[in-house]
Picture 1 (cartoon, rainbow, N blue to C red):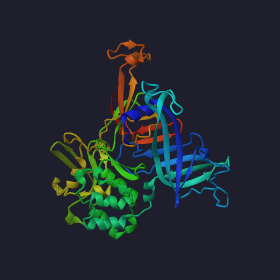
Picture 2 (cartoon, helix red, strand yellow; picture 1 turned 45 degrees about the vertical axis):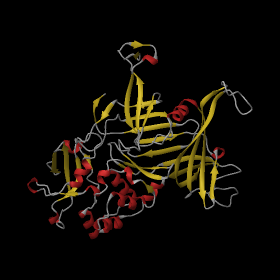
Picture 3 (tube, rainbow, N blue to C red; picture 1 turned 90 degrees about the vertical axis):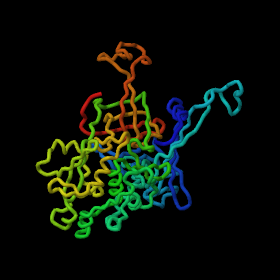
Picture 4 (tube, one colour; picture 1 turned 45 degrees about the horizontal axis):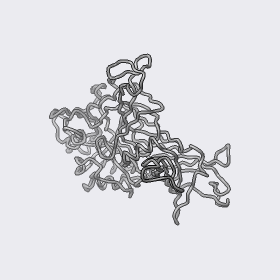
Length: 463
Protein backbone atom coordinates (compact mmCIF):
# COMPACT_ATOMS: atom_id res chain seq x y z
CA UNK A 1 0.00 0.00 0.00
CA UNK A 2 1.22 3.47 -0.84
CA UNK A 3 1.95 5.77 2.07
CA UNK A 4 -0.84 8.25 2.75
CA UNK A 5 -1.72 9.99 6.00
CA UNK A 6 -5.06 9.28 7.62
CA UNK A 7 -5.95 12.97 7.29
CA UNK A 8 -5.33 13.06 3.54
CA UNK A 9 -6.97 9.67 3.03
CA UNK A 10 -10.18 10.68 4.85
CA UNK A 11 -10.29 14.07 3.11
CA UNK A 12 -10.01 12.50 -0.35
CA UNK A 13 -12.71 9.94 0.44
CA UNK A 14 -15.17 12.44 1.91
CA UNK A 15 -14.29 15.75 0.26
CA UNK A 16 -12.82 15.11 -3.15
CA UNK A 17 -13.81 17.71 -5.71
CA UNK A 18 -11.87 17.08 -8.91
CA UNK A 19 -9.69 14.49 -10.66
CA UNK A 20 -7.40 15.41 -13.56
CA UNK A 21 -5.45 12.86 -15.61
CA UNK A 22 -2.38 13.50 -17.76
CA UNK A 23 -0.15 11.15 -19.75
CA UNK A 24 3.54 11.88 -20.16
CA UNK A 25 5.12 10.45 -23.31
CA UNK A 26 8.90 10.28 -22.97
CA UNK A 27 11.34 11.07 -25.77
CA UNK A 28 15.05 11.81 -26.10
CA UNK A 29 14.57 15.46 -25.12
CA UNK A 30 12.13 15.01 -22.23
CA UNK A 31 8.45 14.30 -22.62
CA UNK A 32 5.27 15.38 -24.38
CA UNK A 33 2.04 15.68 -22.41
CA UNK A 34 -1.40 14.39 -23.34
CA UNK A 35 -4.07 16.29 -21.42
CA UNK A 36 -7.79 15.66 -21.00
CA UNK A 37 -8.45 17.67 -24.16
CA UNK A 38 -7.31 14.55 -26.01
CA UNK A 39 -8.65 11.93 -23.56
CA UNK A 40 -12.12 10.42 -23.93
CA UNK A 41 -14.23 10.91 -20.81
CA UNK A 42 -13.97 8.13 -18.18
CA UNK A 43 -12.18 5.82 -20.65
CA UNK A 44 -9.20 4.85 -18.46
CA UNK A 45 -8.86 1.25 -17.33
CA UNK A 46 -5.94 -0.15 -15.31
CA UNK A 47 -5.80 -3.89 -14.69
CA UNK A 48 -3.40 -5.27 -12.06
CA UNK A 49 -3.22 -8.81 -10.72
CA UNK A 50 -1.03 -11.09 -8.66
CA UNK A 51 -3.35 -14.11 -8.82
CA UNK A 52 -6.34 -14.65 -11.09
CA UNK A 53 -6.55 -18.45 -10.95
CA UNK A 54 -9.40 -20.32 -9.30
CA UNK A 55 -7.06 -21.51 -6.54
CA UNK A 56 -4.84 -19.22 -4.52
CA UNK A 57 -1.34 -19.50 -5.98
CA UNK A 58 1.83 -17.59 -5.18
CA UNK A 59 4.32 -15.91 -7.49
CA UNK A 60 2.63 -12.93 -9.10
CA UNK A 61 5.00 -11.29 -11.63
CA UNK A 62 2.08 -10.35 -13.91
CA UNK A 63 2.41 -7.16 -15.96
CA UNK A 64 -0.19 -4.46 -15.37
CA UNK A 65 -2.26 -3.46 -18.39
CA UNK A 66 -3.27 0.15 -18.99
CA UNK A 67 -5.75 1.22 -21.65
CA UNK A 68 -7.42 4.50 -22.54
CA UNK A 69 -9.21 6.11 -25.47
CA UNK A 70 -7.62 9.17 -27.04
CA UNK A 71 -9.28 11.80 -29.22
CA UNK A 72 -7.49 13.35 -32.16
CA UNK A 73 -7.82 17.13 -32.49
CA UNK A 74 -6.40 19.82 -34.77
CA UNK A 75 -3.70 20.55 -32.21
CA UNK A 76 -2.76 16.91 -31.56
CA UNK A 77 -3.56 13.62 -33.19
CA UNK A 78 -2.20 10.09 -33.01
CA UNK A 79 -2.25 9.00 -36.65
CA UNK A 80 0.10 6.24 -37.80
CA UNK A 81 1.96 8.49 -40.25
CA UNK A 82 4.55 11.13 -39.38
CA UNK A 83 3.42 13.10 -42.44
CA UNK A 84 0.42 14.39 -40.52
CA UNK A 85 0.97 17.71 -38.75
CA UNK A 86 0.94 17.76 -34.93
CA UNK A 87 1.11 13.96 -34.75
CA UNK A 88 2.34 12.08 -31.69
CA UNK A 89 3.42 8.54 -32.48
CA UNK A 90 2.91 6.37 -29.40
CA UNK A 91 3.67 2.75 -30.20
CA UNK A 92 6.83 1.64 -28.40
CA UNK A 93 7.06 4.83 -26.33
CA UNK A 94 7.46 4.93 -22.55
CA UNK A 95 4.58 6.63 -20.77
CA UNK A 96 3.72 7.73 -17.25
CA UNK A 97 0.11 8.21 -16.16
CA UNK A 98 -0.49 10.71 -13.36
CA UNK A 99 -3.74 11.42 -11.55
CA UNK A 100 -4.03 14.83 -9.86
CA UNK A 101 -6.62 14.98 -7.10
CA UNK A 102 -8.03 18.24 -5.77
CA UNK A 103 -9.94 17.88 -2.52
CA UNK A 104 -11.34 19.94 0.35
CA UNK A 105 -9.58 19.66 3.67
CA UNK A 106 -8.02 21.61 6.49
CA UNK A 107 -9.47 24.71 8.15
CA UNK A 108 -12.89 26.12 7.37
CA UNK A 109 -13.07 29.82 6.49
CA UNK A 110 -13.75 32.40 7.79
CA UNK A 111 -12.23 31.78 11.23
CA UNK A 112 -11.14 33.92 14.16
CA UNK A 113 -7.89 34.77 12.37
CA UNK A 114 -8.59 34.28 8.67
CA UNK A 115 -11.19 36.09 6.61
CA UNK A 116 -12.29 36.04 2.96
CA UNK A 117 -10.00 37.89 0.56
CA UNK A 118 -9.44 38.03 -3.22
CA UNK A 119 -7.65 34.64 -2.95
CA UNK A 120 -9.48 33.14 0.03
CA UNK A 121 -13.13 32.17 -0.02
CA UNK A 122 -15.59 30.71 2.48
CA UNK A 123 -15.48 26.93 2.77
CA UNK A 124 -12.74 24.36 3.11
CA UNK A 125 -9.14 24.75 2.10
CA UNK A 126 -8.33 23.31 -1.33
CA UNK A 127 -5.53 20.74 -1.21
CA UNK A 128 -3.82 18.73 -3.92
CA UNK A 129 -2.33 15.27 -4.22
CA UNK A 130 -1.01 13.35 -7.20
CA UNK A 131 -0.57 9.63 -7.87
CA UNK A 132 1.50 7.82 -10.47
CA UNK A 133 -0.99 5.20 -11.63
CA UNK A 134 1.11 3.58 -14.34
CA UNK A 135 4.55 3.51 -15.92
CA UNK A 136 5.38 1.34 -18.89
CA UNK A 137 5.61 0.95 -22.65
CA UNK A 138 2.87 1.44 -25.25
CA UNK A 139 2.07 -1.82 -27.00
CA UNK A 140 -0.36 -0.34 -29.51
CA UNK A 141 -2.39 2.75 -30.38
CA UNK A 142 -5.10 1.69 -32.80
CA UNK A 143 -7.58 3.88 -34.65
CA UNK A 144 -11.24 3.11 -34.00
CA UNK A 145 -12.94 1.46 -36.98
CA UNK A 146 -16.11 3.49 -36.45
CA UNK A 147 -14.62 6.89 -35.65
CA UNK A 148 -11.35 8.02 -37.20
CA UNK A 149 -10.80 10.57 -34.42
CA UNK A 150 -10.67 7.90 -31.69
CA UNK A 151 -7.61 5.80 -30.79
CA UNK A 152 -7.27 3.03 -28.21
CA UNK A 153 -3.94 3.03 -26.41
CA UNK A 154 -2.77 -0.15 -24.68
CA UNK A 155 0.40 -0.32 -22.58
CA UNK A 156 2.11 -2.72 -20.14
CA UNK A 157 4.46 -2.16 -17.23
CA UNK A 158 8.17 -3.24 -17.38
CA UNK A 159 7.48 -6.80 -16.18
CA UNK A 160 6.09 -7.38 -19.67
CA UNK A 161 9.58 -6.85 -21.14
CA UNK A 162 10.80 -9.93 -19.25
CA UNK A 163 8.45 -12.42 -20.91
CA UNK A 164 10.68 -13.08 -23.97
CA UNK A 165 14.08 -12.90 -22.26
CA UNK A 166 15.46 -16.46 -22.20
CA UNK A 167 17.61 -16.94 -19.08
CA UNK A 168 18.07 -20.73 -18.99
CA UNK A 169 21.78 -20.76 -19.86
CA UNK A 170 22.65 -18.11 -17.28
CA UNK A 171 20.46 -19.85 -14.70
CA UNK A 172 22.25 -23.18 -15.16
CA UNK A 173 25.62 -21.45 -14.87
CA UNK A 174 24.57 -19.83 -11.60
CA UNK A 175 23.30 -23.14 -10.25
CA UNK A 176 26.45 -25.15 -10.95
CA UNK A 177 28.65 -22.33 -9.57
CA UNK A 178 26.64 -21.99 -6.33
CA UNK A 179 25.42 -18.53 -7.30
CA UNK A 180 21.70 -19.27 -7.20
CA UNK A 181 20.60 -17.42 -4.07
CA UNK A 182 17.41 -15.34 -4.06
CA UNK A 183 19.41 -12.18 -4.69
CA UNK A 184 21.35 -13.68 -7.63
CA UNK A 185 18.17 -15.12 -9.16
CA UNK A 186 16.38 -11.79 -8.83
CA UNK A 187 19.27 -9.95 -10.46
CA UNK A 188 18.97 -12.37 -13.38
CA UNK A 189 15.18 -12.27 -13.58
CA UNK A 190 14.67 -8.51 -13.27
CA UNK A 191 17.19 -7.63 -16.00
CA UNK A 192 18.15 -4.28 -14.50
CA UNK A 193 14.76 -3.28 -13.02
CA UNK A 194 15.27 -2.15 -9.41
CA UNK A 195 14.07 -4.31 -6.52
CA UNK A 196 14.54 -4.49 -2.75
CA UNK A 197 16.01 -7.76 -1.48
CA UNK A 198 14.98 -6.90 2.10
CA UNK A 199 11.32 -7.49 1.15
CA UNK A 200 11.95 -11.20 0.55
CA UNK A 201 11.90 -13.92 3.20
CA UNK A 202 15.07 -13.76 5.28
CA UNK A 203 14.85 -17.49 6.03
CA UNK A 204 15.56 -18.35 2.38
CA UNK A 205 18.12 -15.71 1.41
CA UNK A 206 21.14 -17.97 2.04
CA UNK A 207 19.82 -21.00 0.14
CA UNK A 208 21.39 -22.15 -3.11
CA UNK A 209 18.43 -23.09 -5.30
CA UNK A 210 20.20 -25.78 -7.25
CA UNK A 211 18.30 -28.35 -9.32
CA UNK A 212 20.53 -31.20 -10.51
CA UNK A 213 17.75 -32.78 -12.56
CA UNK A 214 17.03 -29.57 -14.46
CA UNK A 215 20.76 -29.01 -15.03
CA UNK A 216 21.08 -32.47 -16.57
CA UNK A 217 18.04 -31.93 -18.77
CA UNK A 218 19.39 -28.58 -19.90
CA UNK A 219 22.77 -30.16 -20.74
CA UNK A 220 21.18 -33.02 -22.72
CA UNK A 221 18.56 -31.02 -24.62
CA UNK A 222 18.52 -27.25 -24.20
CA UNK A 223 15.32 -26.90 -26.24
CA UNK A 224 13.36 -28.56 -23.42
CA UNK A 225 14.52 -26.17 -20.75
CA UNK A 226 13.63 -22.73 -22.04
CA UNK A 227 12.90 -20.45 -19.12
CA UNK A 228 12.11 -16.79 -19.44
CA UNK A 229 12.92 -14.01 -16.98
CA UNK A 230 9.28 -13.37 -16.13
CA UNK A 231 8.80 -17.07 -15.32
CA UNK A 232 11.89 -17.08 -13.12
CA UNK A 233 10.62 -14.00 -11.28
CA UNK A 234 7.36 -15.81 -10.60
CA UNK A 235 9.17 -18.96 -9.41
CA UNK A 236 11.26 -16.93 -6.94
CA UNK A 237 8.08 -15.33 -5.64
CA UNK A 238 6.38 -18.70 -5.26
CA UNK A 239 9.12 -20.35 -3.18
CA UNK A 240 8.99 -17.25 -0.97
CA UNK A 241 5.21 -17.78 -0.55
CA UNK A 242 4.33 -14.29 -1.74
CA UNK A 243 3.78 -12.08 -4.75
CA UNK A 244 5.90 -9.97 -7.08
CA UNK A 245 4.46 -6.81 -8.64
CA UNK A 246 5.65 -3.54 -10.18
CA UNK A 247 5.04 -0.21 -8.42
CA UNK A 248 5.01 2.71 -10.90
CA UNK A 249 5.49 5.47 -8.33
CA UNK A 250 9.07 4.41 -7.54
CA UNK A 251 9.61 2.33 -10.71
CA UNK A 252 10.65 -0.73 -8.74
CA UNK A 253 9.68 -4.37 -8.49
CA UNK A 254 8.26 -5.13 -5.04
CA UNK A 255 7.54 -8.34 -3.19
CA UNK A 256 4.71 -8.76 -0.72
CA UNK A 257 3.48 -11.57 1.45
CA UNK A 258 0.83 -11.58 4.13
CA UNK A 259 2.28 -9.87 7.17
CA UNK A 260 4.97 -7.95 5.28
CA UNK A 261 5.35 -4.19 5.57
CA UNK A 262 4.59 -3.77 1.85
CA UNK A 263 0.92 -4.67 2.16
CA UNK A 264 -1.59 -2.63 4.16
CA UNK A 265 -5.25 -2.69 5.19
CA UNK A 266 -8.07 -0.61 3.73
CA UNK A 267 -11.60 -0.36 5.11
CA UNK A 268 -14.78 0.18 3.08
CA UNK A 269 -18.10 1.06 4.69
CA UNK A 270 -19.82 1.81 1.38
CA UNK A 271 -19.71 -0.34 -1.74
CA UNK A 272 -21.50 -0.53 -5.05
CA UNK A 273 -21.72 -4.31 -5.15
CA UNK A 274 -20.32 -7.35 -3.35
CA UNK A 275 -20.58 -10.86 -4.78
CA UNK A 276 -19.65 -13.65 -2.38
CA UNK A 277 -21.12 -16.61 -0.52
CA UNK A 278 -19.60 -15.35 2.77
CA UNK A 279 -17.42 -18.40 3.28
CA UNK A 280 -13.77 -18.32 4.27
CA UNK A 281 -11.24 -19.81 1.88
CA UNK A 282 -9.82 -23.16 2.93
CA UNK A 283 -6.23 -23.57 4.10
CA UNK A 284 -3.83 -25.72 2.11
CA UNK A 285 -2.67 -28.84 3.90
CA UNK A 286 0.74 -30.05 2.81
CA UNK A 287 2.80 -29.26 -0.26
CA UNK A 288 3.61 -31.06 -3.50
CA UNK A 289 7.15 -30.52 -4.76
CA UNK A 290 9.53 -31.92 -7.42
CA UNK A 291 12.21 -34.26 -6.10
CA UNK A 292 14.64 -36.99 -7.06
CA UNK A 293 16.00 -40.13 -5.46
CA UNK A 294 19.46 -40.37 -3.98
CA UNK A 295 22.18 -38.26 -5.60
CA UNK A 296 23.99 -41.54 -6.39
CA UNK A 297 21.12 -42.33 -8.78
CA UNK A 298 21.89 -39.24 -10.85
CA UNK A 299 21.82 -39.90 -14.57
CA UNK A 300 19.58 -42.96 -14.35
CA UNK A 301 16.25 -43.14 -16.15
CA UNK A 302 13.47 -41.31 -14.37
CA UNK A 303 15.83 -39.64 -11.90
CA UNK A 304 14.60 -36.20 -10.86
CA UNK A 305 11.12 -36.68 -12.31
CA UNK A 306 9.25 -37.54 -9.12
CA UNK A 307 6.69 -35.62 -7.08
CA UNK A 308 6.73 -35.65 -3.31
CA UNK A 309 4.20 -34.71 -0.66
CA UNK A 310 5.43 -32.94 2.47
CA UNK A 311 3.52 -31.77 5.54
CA UNK A 312 4.53 -30.62 9.02
CA UNK A 313 2.59 -30.23 12.23
CA UNK A 314 4.72 -28.97 15.05
CA UNK A 315 7.83 -31.15 15.20
CA UNK A 316 6.18 -33.99 13.27
CA UNK A 317 6.68 -34.18 9.51
CA UNK A 318 5.58 -36.54 6.75
CA UNK A 319 7.18 -37.21 3.36
CA UNK A 320 5.44 -39.40 0.79
CA UNK A 321 6.05 -40.07 -2.88
CA UNK A 322 3.04 -39.22 -5.05
CA UNK A 323 2.26 -42.26 -7.17
CA UNK A 324 -0.86 -43.95 -8.54
CA UNK A 325 -1.83 -45.07 -5.03
CA UNK A 326 -1.57 -41.61 -3.48
CA UNK A 327 -4.84 -40.23 -2.09
CA UNK A 328 -6.56 -37.87 -4.54
CA UNK A 329 -8.26 -36.08 -1.64
CA UNK A 330 -4.93 -35.35 0.06
CA UNK A 331 -3.43 -34.24 -3.24
CA UNK A 332 -6.33 -31.83 -3.88
CA UNK A 333 -5.83 -30.14 -0.48
CA UNK A 334 -2.07 -29.65 -0.92
CA UNK A 335 -0.37 -26.61 -2.42
CA UNK A 336 1.05 -27.71 -5.77
CA UNK A 337 4.63 -26.51 -6.24
CA UNK A 338 5.61 -29.56 -8.27
CA UNK A 339 6.18 -27.45 -11.39
CA UNK A 340 8.59 -25.05 -9.67
CA UNK A 341 12.17 -26.06 -10.51
CA UNK A 342 13.53 -23.97 -7.62
CA UNK A 343 11.56 -26.05 -5.12
CA UNK A 344 13.40 -29.20 -6.21
CA UNK A 345 14.82 -31.37 -3.43
CA UNK A 346 16.05 -34.92 -3.14
CA UNK A 347 15.33 -37.87 -0.89
CA UNK A 348 16.05 -41.57 -0.54
CA UNK A 349 12.54 -42.98 -0.82
CA UNK A 350 13.57 -46.61 -0.29
CA UNK A 351 12.43 -47.71 3.14
CA UNK A 352 11.04 -44.26 3.84
CA UNK A 353 14.46 -42.87 4.76
CA UNK A 354 15.20 -39.24 4.07
CA UNK A 355 18.51 -37.99 2.74
CA UNK A 356 17.83 -34.27 2.48
CA UNK A 357 14.62 -32.24 2.53
CA UNK A 358 16.18 -29.07 3.90
CA UNK A 359 14.98 -26.76 1.14
CA UNK A 360 11.40 -28.05 1.10
CA UNK A 361 11.24 -27.87 4.89
CA UNK A 362 12.38 -24.23 4.80
CA UNK A 363 9.83 -23.33 2.11
CA UNK A 364 7.04 -25.06 4.00
CA UNK A 365 7.78 -23.50 7.40
CA UNK A 366 7.58 -19.86 6.34
CA UNK A 367 5.22 -18.71 9.07
CA UNK A 368 4.19 -15.37 10.47
CA UNK A 369 3.31 -15.54 14.16
CA UNK A 370 4.22 -18.02 16.86
CA UNK A 371 6.10 -20.39 14.55
CA UNK A 372 3.61 -23.25 14.78
CA UNK A 373 3.74 -25.24 11.56
CA UNK A 374 0.42 -26.55 10.27
CA UNK A 375 0.81 -25.69 6.59
CA UNK A 376 2.62 -23.36 4.21
CA UNK A 377 2.07 -19.68 4.86
CA UNK A 378 -1.04 -19.19 2.73
CA UNK A 379 -2.98 -17.00 5.19
CA UNK A 380 -6.22 -18.04 3.52
CA UNK A 381 -8.46 -16.60 6.22
CA UNK A 382 -10.19 -14.31 3.73
CA UNK A 383 -13.54 -14.28 1.97
CA UNK A 384 -13.25 -14.81 -1.80
CA UNK A 385 -15.36 -12.14 -3.47
CA UNK A 386 -15.79 -9.62 -6.26
CA UNK A 387 -16.16 -6.15 -4.79
CA UNK A 388 -16.98 -2.89 -6.58
CA UNK A 389 -16.06 0.22 -4.59
CA UNK A 390 -14.87 3.78 -5.03
CA UNK A 391 -11.38 3.99 -6.49
CA UNK A 392 -8.60 4.71 -4.00
CA UNK A 393 -5.24 5.11 -5.77
CA UNK A 394 -3.18 4.19 -2.70
CA UNK A 395 -4.60 0.64 -2.58
CA UNK A 396 -2.37 -1.96 -4.25
CA UNK A 397 -2.49 -5.63 -5.13
CA UNK A 398 -1.65 -7.72 -2.06
CA UNK A 399 -3.42 -5.40 0.37
CA UNK A 400 -6.02 -6.57 2.88
CA UNK A 401 -9.54 -5.19 2.49
CA UNK A 402 -12.11 -4.98 5.29
CA UNK A 403 -15.71 -4.62 4.10
CA UNK A 404 -18.34 -3.52 6.61
CA UNK A 405 -22.07 -4.01 6.14
CA UNK A 406 -25.01 -3.72 8.56
CA UNK A 407 -26.60 -6.86 9.99
CA UNK A 408 -30.11 -7.50 8.65
CA UNK A 409 -32.87 -10.02 9.23
CA UNK A 410 -34.69 -11.93 6.51
CA UNK A 411 -36.94 -8.92 5.94
CA UNK A 412 -34.03 -6.59 5.31
CA UNK A 413 -34.43 -4.73 8.61
CA UNK A 414 -31.34 -3.53 10.48
CA UNK A 415 -30.34 -5.46 13.60
CA UNK A 416 -28.49 -3.97 16.57
CA UNK A 417 -25.84 -5.65 18.76
CA UNK A 418 -28.55 -7.51 20.68
CA UNK A 419 -30.27 -8.84 17.58
CA UNK A 420 -33.22 -6.45 17.86
CA UNK A 421 -34.53 -4.54 14.86
CA UNK A 422 -33.70 -0.87 14.56
CA UNK A 423 -34.61 1.80 12.03
CA UNK A 424 -31.36 3.70 12.46
CA UNK A 425 -28.40 2.69 10.32
CA UNK A 426 -26.04 4.14 12.95
CA UNK A 427 -27.40 1.72 15.58
CA UNK A 428 -27.05 -1.37 13.40
CA UNK A 429 -24.45 -4.02 14.17
CA UNK A 430 -21.68 -3.90 11.56
CA UNK A 431 -20.46 -7.20 10.15
CA UNK A 432 -16.88 -7.33 8.89
CA UNK A 433 -15.59 -9.41 6.01
CA UNK A 434 -11.90 -9.63 5.17
CA UNK A 435 -10.66 -10.20 1.65
CA UNK A 436 -7.45 -9.58 -0.28
CA UNK A 437 -6.67 -7.60 -3.41
CA UNK A 438 -5.51 -10.40 -5.68
CA UNK A 439 -6.77 -8.57 -8.78
CA UNK A 440 -8.02 -5.02 -9.24
CA UNK A 441 -9.37 -3.00 -12.15
CA UNK A 442 -9.36 0.76 -11.70
CA UNK A 443 -11.78 2.47 -14.09
CA UNK A 444 -12.80 6.02 -14.90
CA UNK A 445 -11.16 9.40 -14.32
CA UNK A 446 -13.52 11.91 -12.71
CA UNK A 447 -15.44 9.09 -11.02
CA UNK A 448 -12.97 6.36 -10.10
CA UNK A 449 -14.30 2.85 -9.58
CA UNK A 450 -12.30 -0.11 -8.30
CA UNK A 451 -13.27 -3.71 -9.02
CA UNK A 452 -11.43 -5.86 -6.46
CA UNK A 453 -11.37 -9.63 -6.91
CA UNK A 454 -10.08 -12.46 -4.75
CA UNK A 455 -10.50 -16.09 -5.68
CA UNK A 456 -9.52 -18.97 -3.42
CA UNK A 457 -9.54 -22.68 -2.71
CA UNK A 458 -12.66 -24.73 -2.13
CA UNK A 459 -14.39 -22.98 0.72
CA UNK A 460 -15.02 -25.00 3.85
CA UNK A 461 -17.11 -23.08 6.37
CA UNK A 462 -19.40 -20.13 6.71
CA UNK A 463 -18.85 -17.00 8.75
